Image (tube, rainbow, N blue to C red):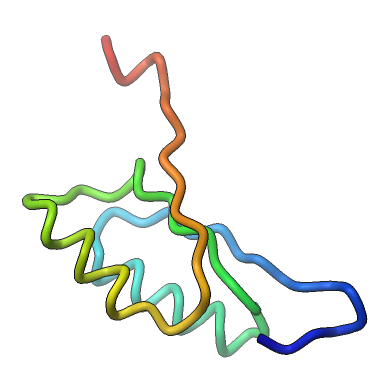
Length: 74
């Protein structure tokens, strides 16, 4: 992580697949992101091991979040 004084850049990633998430992470890294937020609520996982793979293959420090949406229950 590159410290710019006391500023770090965190890029939120919302993607539909783990592969797309990894590609977006590489783009964020190339554009200067220091870390990413992996919005796993937007990813379609066929099995939990896909989420594990995503975390193992990450190329930046990550915050993993799941934002609950009440509309998802309807």
